[in-house]
Length: 274
Image (cartoon, rainbow, N blue to C red):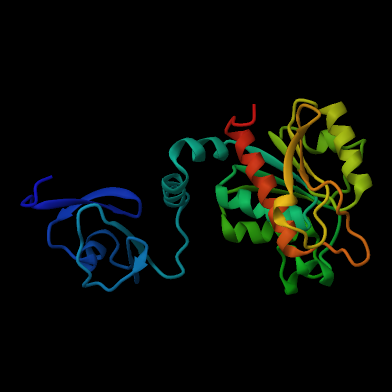
């Protein structure tokens, strides 16, 4: 475009737009969203008199306003890329255990815009959980699956949330995660980890299972590794650091493992772990 063109190309809330050369942020606000009280240009809040240039990205926000599903999808598509968002939007992921790992994995996947999350846990939020789990003080005593669903609904109200207050066993695991594209194993109890893995291998061998073993304490983060085992099972952790007296489950290392889990799940959904 020549410098003497009467218009310039910008983006307004991630949508292409052409505006008159010489417009400032206030003019864009008046034309596109007069009620906006936060004006952002190229990632930085600025005043209405801020001038615009070719290629600028403008975001107009009304303080406290919840975007529609279409608006949020457009924003997420722009951030993730259309191919990524379209594929994760169609997915249903099962979260087996909504504690330190499960709550963090679910938050990451909710922010990604995964279409549906099945949240399964029989436990309630305890005070000691708050050192690493994605809950709040006023949720102590609430069922974890329900409390996590409430928190996720505040992050992304357009994800379909399926909270189940249920203890997962060898007998009910396959039925519990029916129709899930991937399952995240997020238990603290080694026996529960074993039972879920056995049940999924028997009842749903085609469903990818992303498990964790060895994340306690405060050892180096790079010791938490991702390995593919047993064909359709991924194992995350150092394999040795189990929780024990003097070696607790702490937020930083739990978050590292949960990040690995969420990323492996994303790669599976995108076909990158075939």
